Structures are given as structure tokens and as C-alpha cells.
Image (cartoon, rainbow, N blue to C red; front, side, top):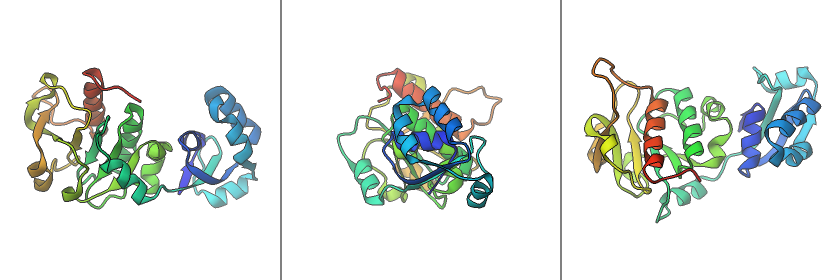
Length: 234
């Protein structure tokens, strides 16, 4: 899979991805970035990065990242991710995106989940959470949390808390660490299958005149509520 840009490569290396190839048009500039922003992986990047002409980078990547860095990484095995998602007891939630439609939003959610130390992100439906656009939006943080696609009837264990406008105000609840936090699609909300699996329906505070939040915003608010009421980033 393609890692597009310095930050994606930095995160992949930091979270121990297998990165066989990494290239840049300016090795010195890339290592200077590492000195400034990621000294913990600077030595690893120095060993990995190969300088190539700009024409070579453009031949490999149609739209090179402004940092002029690109790499290839090996996707974690599905079996390993499923083992992580199924493990109990669990100390951090799993985020479920029910039939998401927007690739960029899915990437942003994976980035959020990694930041809060969530166990993983599961998608249902047809969207591939490892699509290149999702990976780019996740900034290499697919390697910091378990990311997989599953049918609704194979969700990870744990009480399912689904976000829905008709649910109970989230501000009155404490979310358990082993929660499965489910979010409906941007257009249609929760599917009937996911809604029927929910143990609890939750609602985010919102003015009556406002119809909805962006998906990534909803996930951020929910994970923040979890962390502020007892959970914490790893």
C-alpha cells in the first residue's frame, strides 16, 4: 500500500509497519523534517529513504505529496487485526462506521481513533477502509489501530452504543472501555441491522435547527466524551 507524504511514513515507521521502500526527491530536507518533528524515528528514516529524481517520483505517484516523500508498506494481516478486535477484556472502544460513503471521512475517523488510542475501526458495507484515499486521510495511522471491514453480525464483542438523534443524551452517560461505538452513514444514518444490534442509542447535543454533524466530528465528540469520563489515550 502507498504511504503518501512524510507524515504517513513517519507514523507507519513509528507504529512498526513493514516498509520495504521509501523514496524522496530531497533526502536532506526529509531528514531535517525528521529532526524537527519525529526525532524518535529519524535513524529509521535515514536507513530507509532513497533519493530519486523528481521525474521518478512523479512516475511512481501521480500527485506527489508536498513533502516529496512516498513509500510502500505491507498491510497488516486480516487475521492479526481480527484477533486484536476480538480480544477480551478490552481497555479501549472499537469504532464502527455503518455503511460509510465518504472516503475522506473514513480516513479522518481512523486518524481520530488512533489519537484516542481506540482498539480499532470497523466498517460495514462496501467501502474499503484500506482504499488509497482512506489511507491518505488517515496519515499512516492505519498501523496504530486495527482497521477492518466486517458484516454487522460479526462485530467485535462488547456493548453496542449507537449514535442516533432519538437516543439518550450522551452527556448523562459514562461509556465503558469495552464499548462498540457505532455511527451511521452520512446520508441515511444507522442501518436497520445495526440499529437492531444496539444495546443503547445515544444522541449528541445539537441545536434543533441543525440537522446533523459531519461523521468525523461525531466520532471525535464521542471519543472525547469517553476519554473525559474515565477513558484515556494510550
